[in-house]
Amino acid sequence: MVFMRPALRGLALMARIAHTRHGVQVDAYNTATQSMERWQAQQVVVTLPVFVAARVVQNPPEFLRQAVQQAVQTLAANTLEHLARIIHESRWLCRRSLFWAG
Image (tube, rainbow, N blue to C red; front, top):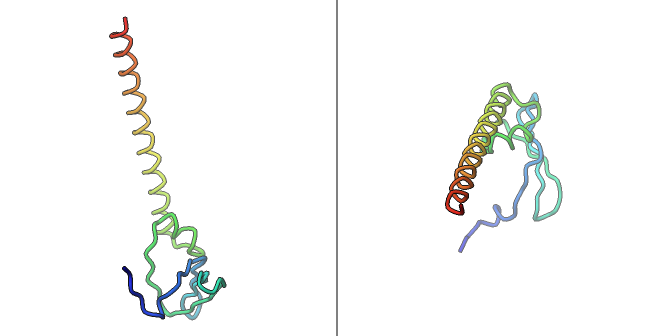
C-alpha cells in the first residue's frame, strides 16, 4: 500500500527542460489535470537515462551528447557480440544434430 501526501498526487511527464537567463524551465504534462504546466526554478536535479535526457533537454550540453554517443556505441557493440555468439552456438548445434542424425 502506498501513502502519498495530497501535494504529491498525480503524475507529471517531462516534455522539455530548458536553461534560460533566469534559471531552468521545465514543461511537464500533468496527468491528473490533463494539461501542460511550466515550472521555473533556479536549479533542477533530474535523474533520467541518458537516451531520454538527450531528447528532453533542450540544447543538451556537450558531455550529454558524448554520453549518448558512447551509450549507442556500447549498445551496438554488445548487440553484435550477442548476435555472433548466437550464430556460433546455432552452427554448433546444427553440426551436432546432423552428426547424431546421420
